[in-house]
Image (cartoon, rainbow, N blue to C red):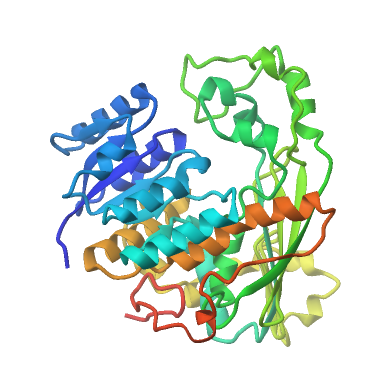
Length: 429
């Protein structure tokens, strides 16, 4: 077991910088050895933050290949633009590094196969840093499912319901990759927040797998309306700095956004379950992931944060509003052990602490030199959904097969790594 690990971080937009400041730098057993961004100002800011936090002689470069050459680095954390994730991940594994890859979909199925084959060839793990797998509520529901409270699970749903119009519309000023994706693609481009927890709950790639999907898209109207309404004014979101540009780039005035406002994807699983995922990011709305689990004995619905148990809640059938929010009463008994432990300590990091949890899961694997709880097969299976949804949308919702990246091993996978961050079973320590 390594005492302290050395990390290289690639990509310092808003997400990468916040993870550096709020998650990685505060960890005593992690040393930031190198930072990289193609923009020199971001690179220099990351170096400054790292050195001010007590990391001496941080190597900084605008070329990620220079970071991969540093032999003493144990792991690479990739937080740059979506298009670069898989290429950098593969090169990092070939360089003998553990890889933690931020959320985002793939652009080609062969990319996903290359990710899997590179990991298999090198023996280096690749973990998608899907923080929602470690969300407090998601892990409580996983615990309840494993304990049989919901019976047999037959259907799950979720979505990325997040008003991103400000972020997309200011993509030129903010050098943000989402803008070019929304201009040129039409797919579920950000599905893993909902799919990750659901896939673990349904034992995907370990006794079950996703077989096929269909995707349909609404028209694209939200971004065009937003740009038209805000060409001369723009209220900057909380994460923009004082002094940043406050007006939309005029080149967007007549832009055509190909990304549909609502994309709905339905997945059929080998075990007979269905999964419905929704992308909803360009219309006015409140944030929600819509996490929903339906079983033969009960269900959970995030929209009302409520749990319905057969035999206990049937009398509220016509008056369910009285039970909205009742999931909160289950946390004391069914919180996952890592969240029970977190109650005793100050919860650190962003997104209510789940950023901290997913990075601890990754770094503990690096320290122990074991496989990661979200492995390369999970990563490829979740990333491929963007590609396949794009294909299905182009085919007017025709079914598209989902590759089996385990090549049949899902039916009888080797034992997983047991530990407190394991997502296959609940480890009571």
